Length: 214
Image (tube, rainbow, N blue to C red; front, side, top):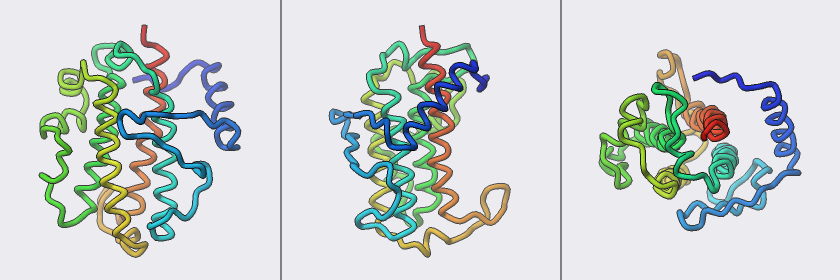
């Protein structure tokens, strides 16, 4: 999928990003019906979060901020926009939302030792999680016709589990290292930061698709 948009769109994106960074543009997001209502008054202030270790608090701050942006950008999206395909090889916004949940679930399985995979199904069959992870043809076939609430509910369920587990861990756990990306030493902090970065990457795709949906 082509990632370079018109120059005007890039300028608008940079202008909006600068306002967000300055804390001047604070849209209201209300997804109470799906349990994903974000009310953090200090959403733009990264720092200590109650119940979390110091560095894990920073991680939670980033996770909350990026999710805030994702939810804002899909607020009020139509079924047509959710299922819109740019071409026969692309992914829908709905599939990408489920892909975000599936990726986070993957890192739960990888980093939360001792939790059986079966406990992390969140009411979804494994073939659906597989389609969400791999996208492509499987994602196009399986992830369509589902309402926005379906995707938001799964994003929220997966995130709430992550936050509950991260509350049980300390900063030394965050720095534990294993071979991962390219078989290179990778700590849990890097893995979970990738969850944030991954949402940012696909949020850009979803914005583009939403603008092209007709």
